[in-house]
Length: 461
Image (cartoon, rainbow, N blue to C red; front, side):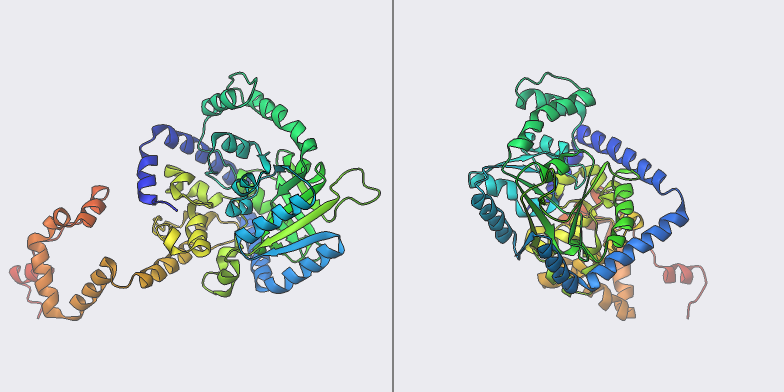
């Protein structure tokens, strides 16, 4: 929970933050644009990916049952959790049964929904982020500011100082390769020592019971193979029907997220270690988290929210996010996708200000690889939020507008009064004064068109 308005003002006041974001966003947009330079190929691939996601959601209950069946046949243990609290308890129970006191964790937005790190630490379990960006954030005691690049708001000198302060024996350096090597040395031995590994899931294939994980650094592969137990946490919407469905989604995901043709590692996990395998965990667990997704799925107007493949392209192109960063949203999911998802899974009481934190410019819709209609959903959420408020300034204003335009006499009276005193309104109304502080104030004409016509000798009657 937070106040987006105040957070955004604080972010806009930081020249360093705005500079960091601008450089990062410009680079990401350029790389993505180069990947989809062929408009016809982009259109065809996007349509294919969108159809895959819509078909998966249309058959969601059936595919989830099939996924449980095939995973169980593959010796992957499936657990269902309606809430983050239930999912956290399942993770803790698995760790305690296996005597695991340390956990290495690959990147996972669902685990952020669960606030898993804090929960495990409160229960005496040490958990270490192994994605480089997440590792930086964990050392800094912060939350991710982007769903793909969690420390995108930091520059090299900030990370260099953080490593010098937090990692024993680390010398100050701003060289990216040296910083990566420092993190590698600090993390490498922890994979072998950990009692369990936790990861997210990019896509789960119902037909084969396969968990697909996409990454660049190899930390996900080590988190899923070196520890004796692998726990994968996943939102229920990530299921797809077949392996054939994965290919277009992978291409759309990686090219939209980081401008790469493909990521370094694509991990396909279909079972724990078998008798003739040289490595791998002895147990694999899949936790399927609902956390409000069933309610979203049941609403025809809001269901397209679940099409999202978490590429982050909407954030990279959003004129709001690119100026204030992810922390201004005070939510697990920031940016355009966060504006529509967080009010739905956590309620308007927590995140009712987010649907209004948008210009509705549609840049997010233009680049979304699976055509999530973000602006349409924002308008839907704004309308529903207004209904919960009852009588509000907005509803009063629009009711007045309706009454005025239904009565010619009242319309003439109001427009004449506005022509005389309309320029003083922002000074008298605090809300309008704040609005006009960053926008051009509309000017009310001193004379109406009808009056000008009469004075000019043109009788409208």
